[in-house]
Image 1 (cartoon, one colour):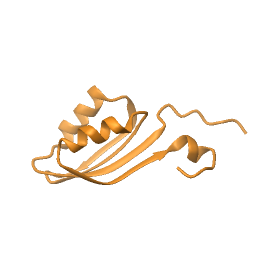
Image 2 (cartoon, rainbow, N blue to C red):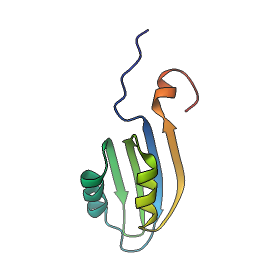
Image 3 (tube, rainbow, N blue to C red):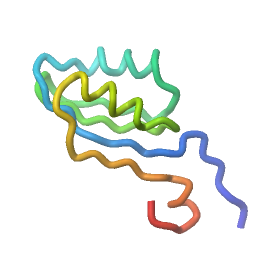
Image 4 (cartoon, helix red, strand yellow):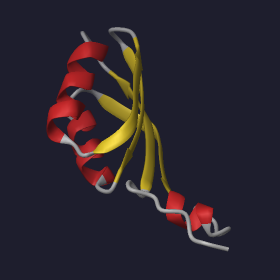
Length: 87
């Protein structure tokens, strides 16, 4: 079986709780500062859910922590998952 090619290894998901959060501003920051794909930033001014595929999840966590409290953080290794291993 041929290995699946994955451009961005880490599926990064988290919640940001804060004040005056903006989906549009967060999306714009991601698009101009991070390499990755499958960006999802949805919510309201007090709670935003982030989903993003990247090779540098720590950068995403550092940025999101500047916006408010981050929690329910999940970083899964999609290469390991594709090979049938725990993420």
